[in-house]
Length: 87
Image (cartoon, rainbow, N blue to C red; front, side, top):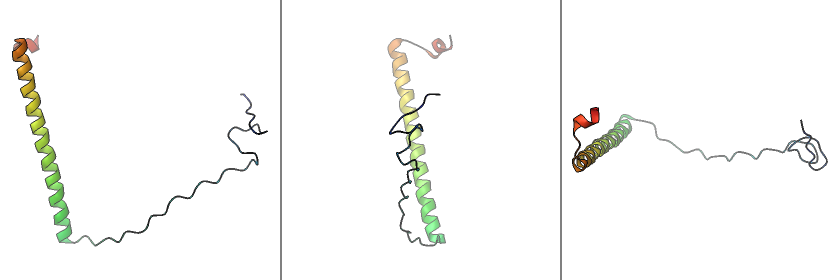
C-alpha cells in the first residue's frame, strides 16, 4: 500500500496535528406549532388528497388518449394496420 506524505504525516487525509477534524454542528430548526388534527382538518386534508389524485388520474387518461391518437395517425400515414403489428 502506498504511503501518503502530506504535511509530514503518513496517514491519508489527516491534518498536521493528527487530531480528527470536528464535524460542524447540525442546524437547529425551530419547533413549528401544530394544531391538533380534528375531524374538520382531517376531512379537509382528505378532500385535498382526493382532488390531487383525481387530477393526476385525469391527466393520465388524457395522456393515453393523445398517444393512441398519435399512433393511429402514424399508422394511417405509413399505411399500417393492426395486423401489420402482429407480424
